[in-house]
Image 1: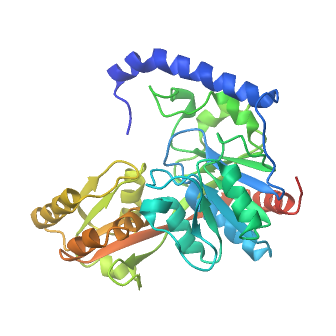
Image 2: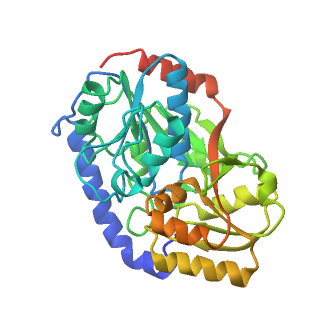
Length: 356
């Protein structure tokens, strides 16, 4: 959510202090004052320069699928944001799912379920997760999810994801805005992926102001619907099941508006929508709120995101209470590379075939 203009002005001095601290930390890494650890295998990182909602998770899934198709054995490393556990947790060993959203984090569990044979490990320190992934799970390439600011682990390919809809040149640093680093940090990227492109909107003009920081022409991509599944039985559902009656759409993700646009692009009629904060931990009161909104709106079913679904499914009682109201569907999405796919795949192959 955006910071209100009056509050933004009050917070700007804190953003300047934050920026100085970030620049000092980056210089410490650049000058070698802070040590970077080697994983012993190729490492590629996917991250962003703003908080949440850039579409990096679908991109990670796309990259991992390419690595698997190329004969590699990748593992995904993540922090597991807002999980209840600490230390190293193996979300999936590539054979079985060993954690739920509560102990492993919603995005790691989502990726583990979708990618199946790919190990997923979470830890506050990615170097600790890397050791487990290489030593115990026999990964020969590591993919850091949300790793742009996590500089203590060396990487061979640094991919920065930028949301095409958000003008970075007008976005202040935290806490007044959503930018994590000064714009000059873009120079650390080996490749920039411009995400969530609107093919009808034309060129992203403000990117011209960032040209001096870019490593080359950005790869462009967009988020596309990839189907639905029913929470009741995990079975795939056809879009037609969601077109017969109006729906109640709800999510606890950073890009709630993007979720609604995806549904509308498929012809889904939204009777009402409810937005929770990103990574929201659902409680009984939330489910009761949804049940009341379902009744008052006249909606016949509920639709949420895949990330929200894995959080709800981690609480069986909440899931049962919600399913007692109406059918619940989860929307899947995937990334589509609009331009630059050959460059992206070549960079991946060069990274995966290299050695640190």
